[in-house]
Length: 327
Ligand code: XMP
Image (cartoon, rainbow, N blue to C red; front, side, top):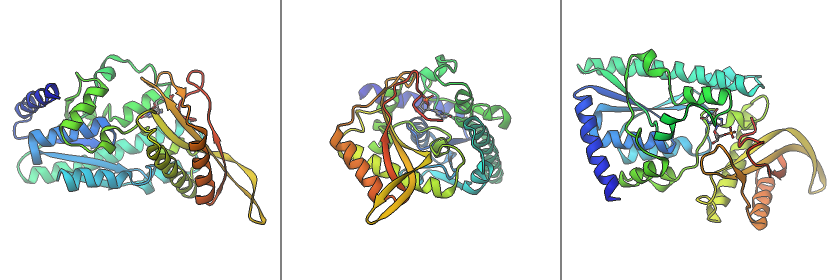
């Protein structure tokens, strides 16, 4: 890791020179890239950094808490957690079309981010500095790739979510410390910076979050079902040492009900699909050969522990022609 330690030193100096006495804001998603950027900037410029984490009500269980513990409690970064779940969920009410979901989420995200940035700006100005920079976790592959690999509106929203378009609208200059790095190098840097394994080795999670994993119209109840099932899946994947061997693992809540028996009674409940893939670049992916006994445990636990789900199916489609997500 000596190479990354050198990089860290040089990059910190470069950032300090660029930033001077100005202020930087950074949108944290909880993913690897933005987390590494936040930790790096904090090391370089300390309290001249403010991070923004938007809770859109579409996060997995414990996600917000992990970000708060890591960045506020451990690194002592000035972290603003914006609770915007009501706004996002209202926007999504009754919306079934995946791209329309993405569009609404993207717009709301920009609204919330802009408003928060404006609030921070006026606070900072009182202390006679000003926000001039927005930090982003752009990686080298993001720089060279022109959006292929993301299908259609997914490409758009990836930009939205990674707050592309925002710096221009807000009038901030961009700081992109990871522009020369590949993902594995960003992870190494994260380790050097002392980020926990749970963040450094985190699977990617789409910007629209659980909104594209509750198929069809979203309700709070469905999100809760999905969250509970997803938590069980992840627990079992981690417990069976499969997390590092898979690229992405998640549950999709299907918009169909099926019949089951529970005790003496008949149930008519939701179906959960388990998706686990292996992939290098997410442009192609193969379904993961999770051992049957692990699948059995996952299925039993979800059906027994999550009231409202009585059937679990395993997705055995590869990409292409299927995509990783279902929406
Ligand atoms: P697909 O489903 O297109 O997914 O095979 C490829 C990768 O992209 C992620 N993905 C998204 N990420 N916003 C994102 O930030 C999106 O709208 C979006 N849609 C898909 C997906 O999780 C996978 O890693």
